[in-house]
Image (tube, rainbow, N blue to C red):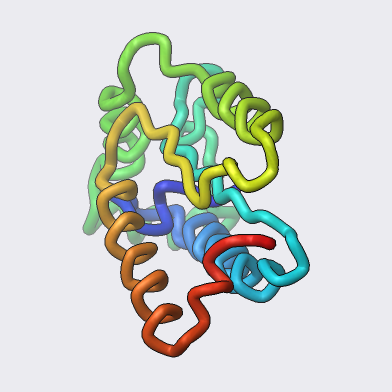
Length: 155
């Protein structure tokens, strides 16, 4: 499981979450090549922000240090509310988290060798898919240039 925050739009105040997701994405990319010769397929699922049913941004947490929070508010007045409201407004009506679980179930049900390397489920379209397509293309080209193209697919 990745996140569109790895390569897409990232609102402030969620850096630890974004860093953790970026690490997981990088690990999956590395393991995909390392495990290909063992026949282990990798599918990286990249959900965007889903606020319906999760209140993801609104409930992402508050700092325990209220003095620091107050200091931030002097320079970023209302930013927490904006971070909670604006991304939620980008998601189209009916964008429910079940879209992610449905896609995972679809991928798992596919025959071996037909599973996609990376799939985006991002109703808000924060740009992650376009960025990932470039990064994944560069990865494919690099592995091909160093004579490791066989690591791009499983046997």
